[in-house]
Image: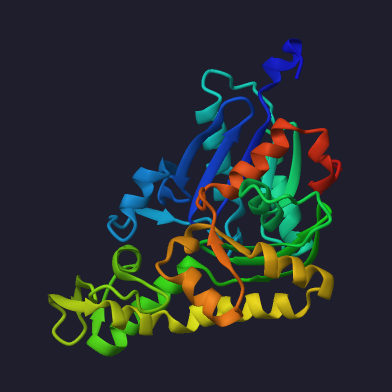
Length: 344
């Protein structure tokens, strides 16, 4: 971008995720990575805090303050709060430049409807963008994971996020076949909460479930000595606080159903893949990205279920924003993979 246009704000790429929002600024790299949570004062409808501070408030706020996650299952559930959150993040990145109007590339799940597409685009404009471009998450993740997406070979990407799992086969810079299911890290947490409630009559919050999943969660037996974790919550029988001990095997049992749904999505996509590209995937393997790729043993489990080589991308957590950022850097060359639409 020429210098006389620099005041308009630098190009940005945003991975507007269900769990975390990441922002990449052209020429500077990833400048922000915060939870997609907003704490609101319900009586004045003012924003109390956004991001990390707001996440710490989940389940711990007084009556007049609520911690809201404006995105659900990868799409905007609360338009107004999403727009305010996005504006907050843009202004945080562009300090002192309230008139900064950047071009923004936003990554969205591949399975969303045109209405949801429009909501994301509109949120970008409301938050102060000059132009908004949309890129599909599997494409962004494949670019970020360093797959040769522009070559005529089959690349398979499985991006397990907080709200959605995106499975896609990419060749020649386009998505050949894809599957987007609204199951991700959040569903694993919910499955854990329900399991603990049913098996132990213990009520736990969503943050506790997430911590258990991160510490001892796994998709297949890990071979090491079975780990255990202390779980604190409220006893549903007595109503008093109580601590139980959960083993890794219990956690595996609890999250079995959502994990199976993710494996089924991978199988379905492989099933719909053209035979030539299937051969390429046999050679190159499946790339795993997203926070869910860090679940212990998920790669082994997929390898066992599909018979394909599976590898976790090095930057699994940021591959979507890095891929979108690559588009912001090489705007002209990668214009092909963006879903553009002029503002009406």
